[in-house]
Amino acid sequence: MGLRLALCQYKSDKGDVNANLNKIMAVISQTRSDVYIFPELFLTGHGADYAALSTDVQYAIDKMRLWCVEKDIAILVGSPSYSSNGTRNSTLFITPNDVVKYDQLYLTRFETRAEKAFVRGDRPIVSKFKDITFGFSICYDIFFPEIFRNYALACSDVNICIAASSAPYRQLFERVLPARSLENLLYTVFVNGAGGEGDHKLWGCSRLIGPMGNTLSDLDEEEGVLCVYVDKEVVKNARKDRRHLEDRRIDIAWIPDEHESFDKECDPIR
Image (cartoon, helix red, strand yellow):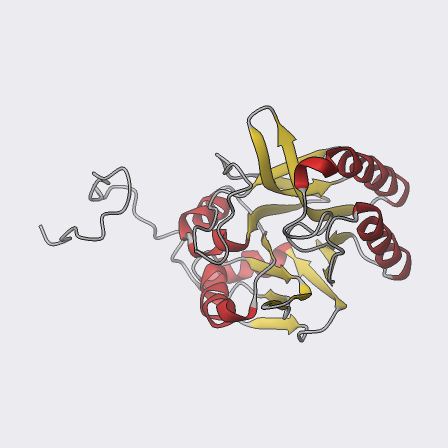
C-alpha cells in the first residue's frame, strides 16, 4: 500500500500567516495528493516576530484541520509552537484525527543562523497516516543520524525533513541526505523553501530519496510542487536485499559518553 505526497516548495511571506495559509489552500485545491508537505516555518516565515503571531497560527491550524477532515488528507507544515516553556520550531502533522507536533531537537548555533528564538525539543516523534508511518525532522536535525536510526527501529517507512536551508549549506545536505536513507533503508523526503531575502537565499531542490539512497525525483531552485508516490513494499523489499538493520548488534558495550558536551581537545585514543 502506498500514498501520494505533494512536496510543496514555496516561499513564505514573513509575518503574514493568512497569506501563507492561502498558499496552502491553493495548492490543495489544485493538486491531488494524500499528504501535502510544506517547508520549515512556512506558516510565519523565517525570522518573523513569532510571539506576536500565536493567535494567527492557531486560527490557521484550526482551518487546516477542517480541510483535512473534509478532504481526508494530511498537511505537514513548519510553524512555531507555543507553551509556557517558550517557543519551539515545530513540524505540525495535521490529519483528520489529530495534530501531531514534532519540535526540532537540534537548533543551529552558527553565528549567521543561530536559532536563539526557540527552545529545543526533547523527543523524536513518529505518526501513521493511512498505513504509512512517518518520522519527522527539521533542517539541522539531518546531521544527527541517531534520530533517523531511532525512527527506522520504530518502523518508520518515510522520514520527512523540512528545511529553510540557504545556499552555502547545499553541498552538505546533498552529501548526507542519501546516507540517511541508505543506512536506514527507507524513504527520505526533503522539502526546502525557495526564494529568500538578501544573502539568505534558499536553494530549494526538494526531493524524494529511495531506500537505497537514490534520488527518485526532485525539483530545481524555483517554487513548485513535486508529486511523488511512496510504497511500504519498496521499503520491505529493500530490507530483504540489504541486511544491515537486521544485522545491527545490540551486545556491544559502546564507549560511554563521559562529557556533558563535545570537548574539542579530547583525545579519542584509549
